[in-house]
Length: 146
Image (cartoon, rainbow, N blue to C red):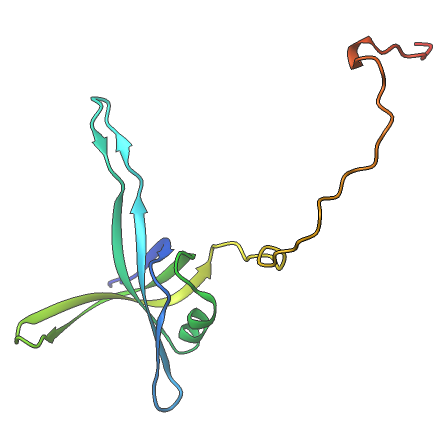
């Protein structure tokens, strides 16, 4: 028995690059960053943040969803399989590419509300004047019988 499963939580490093093929199939490619936070050792040595870059591949309906809704900087949760392929470059050197073929994705970035993108030029509203007691709060006396 063997298992090939990858789970990543990180951020889109770019807008997706989408290709449509004959027959209606769709492939979206996306650079994806995961970052391990840095820390300080007990002796004071600083360990910086470590960012890993991944190549994500989304196919068919998932590729269409990514094209429509995912943008650079969005936080995503992805599950998929890791695959490595090779090709010969223009100089004849064999190159290897490791990719994550995504099976499942959840968008973790909050949806912008409709009001966040509109700019209005309305003057600020001032609340109506209220009766403010002339004595400070701690010096006010209650007329309560208890």
